[in-house]
Length: 65
Image (cartoon, rainbow, N blue to C red; front, side, top):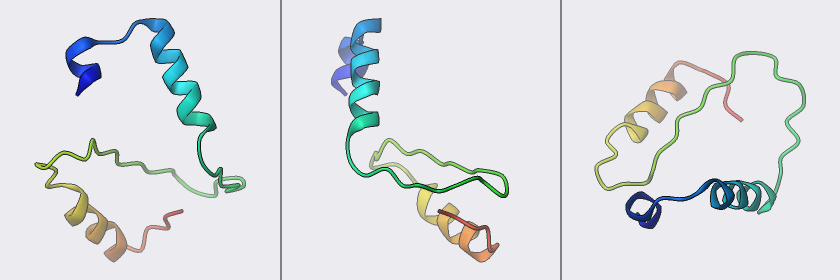
């Protein structure tokens, strides 16, 4: 929310992106064998898509990593 209200300049965006990239564990997934799918969520209270979408993807047997 702070970024939404205050914005970020280019230098701040680069610093944040590099920090996020370097944080945590990196998974070695190898070479993809099919299409890559991604569904991002901001984690808001009104996110009514993530749970039903996860169930639909699981039911359709899409391989997720």
